[in-house]
Length: 300
Image (cartoon, rainbow, N blue to C red; front, side, top):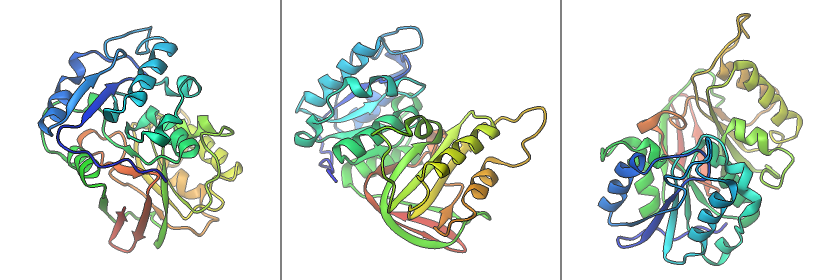
C-alpha cells in the first residue's frame, strides 16, 4: 500500500467537491479549523460552482481534482461534501499521479467511490472521515480529533461498547469499505475488486430497509463476503420502512445475511452519518479488530 506522509505545519491542503454543490460559506469553519492546525488551505473551483445539484459539470469536477492531484505542494485533498456524483467522474481523472505524488484523500458517504477506486487502482491509503460540510465550528469533537490524529500521526484506534448482535473474534487485514449504497453501485467494476483477506466496513443513510437487504444479498451473491476477515457495521441512520413492515431492523437484516459465515462481526460502530461523532479510520491500512464480550477495538 502507498501511505502518504503525515501532515506537518506549513503544508498546503485543498478543499474541492466531487459531488453535490456546496457554497463558499459552508466551508468557512472547516477552512478556519485547518488553518488553526497550521495548514495552508487552497479552495478549488468546484466550491461555489453549481450545475443543478452538482458542484459544477462533470468535467469541471474532474479537472478540479486533477489540478490538486498534480500539484506537488498539495499534501491532502478534503472532499467538501457527499450527496451524489463522485462515481460519474472516476474515469475522467488520472489517479495514477498519486503513485509518484501520494497525498491524503479525505471523505466518506458518496466519496466512498473515490476511496475504493484509488485503493484498488493505485493501492492508496486514504481517510474515511468527516468532511468540511460537517464542520460548523472549531470544537475539538470526536470526529475532528480522530481526523487530526490520523493526518498528523498516521495512527488510529477506535473503541466502542459491545452490541448484542456482535460475533466475537479477532481479525487482521486491510480495512476497506464505506457507504453500502455506493459499494453496491461499484459492484462489477474495477473500483470494487477482490475482497479476500480484507476487513469490510459498511454504513448507510436514508435507505428503505428492503434496500439494505437487497444490497446485502448482492454483496453475498457476488462473493464479496466469501473470504473477508471481518465485517464492521457503522451507523444505519434514518432508515425507512413501507406500510407493510419489513419486520427487521437494518442490523438484523445484515446479521441474517452473514449468519452462515464464521468471520467476526461488529455492529454499532461510531462511524457514518452521525456528525461530530463520526470517527475517522485509515481506508486501506492494515487493522487489527478485536470483538469481545465487552468492547470492539480497532487498531491501525
